[in-house]
Length: 411
Image 1 (cartoon, rainbow, N blue to C red):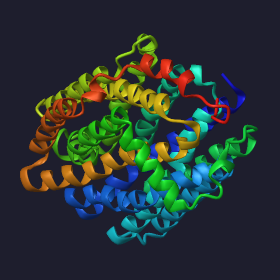
Image 2: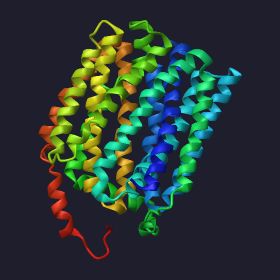
Image 3: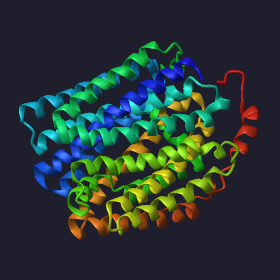
Image 4: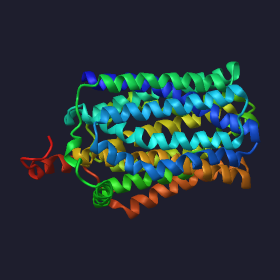
């Protein structure tokens, strides 16, 4: 493992633990303030709008400028946003409008942070180690995702929302320092003179031409839009399972715990060629597990179901990330990472709105169950409509690389 990759890995773990505190605190604070599942779900929409508008631009920036500095600046912006949220909460000036404003600012900063972080992580490791590095990175990130929500629920319960935000703001320093210590320079100068809009258009054409990659994007949008009930976790915990504020953190931790176990045992994926088939199967399992979670009668059973869902999502994420890195050329990496983040990050945002609206109309349990079923059915439809994803063979791309290489192409 390279020194630079270790820096990003460690800094990312600290950063993600802190981010999980806000992930627990913000929707819980909104629900206690308004008692409205719909407004809780709208947090995702408010974050998603600036994220969606700016993420492709963020990917172009990641391919144009030194990725180390782009990462450091985006992390600093996110730290200031979270610190501001802590400040207004300490003063008691929080309203639904204030929480929405900070959610929008966080979404805008994430549009730059996500693409450059993904592109930089892949930039600093040899291409032949990409699959194992993706598995390791995803597994390590899930360690923080397991600990973070549980700690976040306890911090909120014991110390309050303001301290949760304050701790999160401090943890951004870890990734800022890691970015500044990285020695490897990304080859951003190749597109330095290309207009930004033309650069974005070229990235979109590349994604559409790679049908397996496009299918991997679509299937994740389907899964996260209908089958990610994260916005309903505070409502489930407080009103359905009577698990208190801490229960929200444990529900989030259950997803991450399942993902961690799957990622840490994903060695079997190293030699697998037909990654698309595994993606489709994993999304079907994800949806069914979420649907069952909406039917069970105990909090413990719901935790088990969400752990199974998290494991399926982990397998899908590793395979989809590998497909992305396999088919993407280095000069396109920032833009394709932006699209990947738009899908991976945007789907749950839209899912927050969908699940919040469904819960407001039909109740919490029907919203969770129907969303899981629609997610599984949607995965099958994507496989039928985009057979290139289902038939994806990583060996085909490895064999094609030497023939496609030119003297001026990246290694």
